Image 1 (cartoon, rainbow, N blue to C red):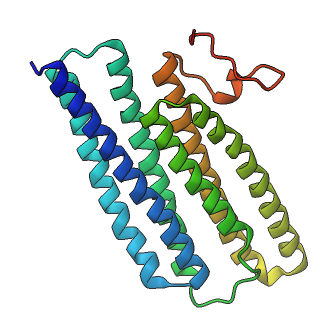
Image 2: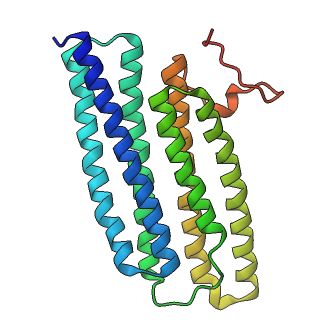
Length: 233
């Protein structure tokens, strides 16, 4: 059985691994959007390679979590931290998968002229990336306020997603030859929207880690907009 000091060190190491994985996920988002904007096939292929690295890291962190549970019977708050980490790495891995999905569409559209300037899609990607960054930071710092910010940002991403879809629908109505590419861009926007959803999931698990309750963040607010955490004294 490991000592409490050793357990805390291993828990801190777990936090560092999560931060590293989060950085790789953010890099993956940056690269996939840069590849899309530049129609850079090689960079898009690099996103696929990085996805494999992130998959491997998920497995490494998962094993560390299991070892922590097996080596010592954790306190309730420690068990929550470990189980939260297991949930977080799943969401981060799926975010990386969506980056790879976008990279695949980028390769498919590499030799065609885009039907519209890429303005809102890169903006949406940056918002999703910032949400990932904040959600991981919120976990490490046990910061519910940051988790709230992630929730609020998800609403902004949804609004931008709806704007993009409406614009693409109008393009398809006016130009039948643009339909195929417009649909591809719709998928890209949907993948970005899903990234934001996964970042919000991470925020929700942060709330669980701090309060012991798991619920959608939107349900944790009074009608006056102020946060309500019944389990936080």
